[in-house]
Image 1: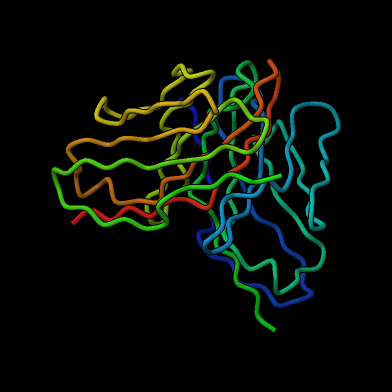
Image 2 (image 1 turned 180 degrees about the vertical axis):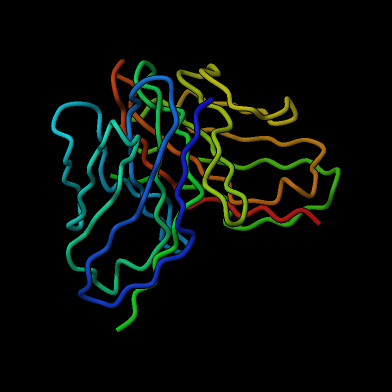
Length: 115
Length: 114
């Protein structure tokens, strides 16, 4: 059965510090992998995605993520966090054969940014 | 270009009642997916509609049903509401072209069941 694990429920970082949010997945094959961000009162916004090829993917807002097949991980990183990055972050997987329309999400990591 | 919109924003119902949530897809999109996001959880896939037909369903009972209209807008209906149905309901639209199609999410409808 598929599963997505985000082991950190809540992370607090100082503005300007680096950030890494962890995501591990369990799936029969390499799925499509996604990171979404959700701000209060907003819908989910896609930060980046991985389908195949280069394992380091760049996204919007200065985020990047690295796919590691051996660890079944897809961790999200940002070198310098801004106060506006405070939000809930979700890792998601999707079956590659169906265009990933039925996404399976992790439970999310809440990011707090302190001055 | 108008994004995905959902109505109402908030809704309060009592156990056993029925509810209808609405979603207007982004211009040019032909596919709508619905997700349920319980408090402190990630969104869970309910079902998807493509060209007015259900095109995939998650692990939700039949009392969760939907419709898609010719203009690709959609409704989510939930009968016999239970307390555990309290959640944020998210709608996402996309343009199905056979390959990957990015989903664009609406802000959601917050349903409270008392």
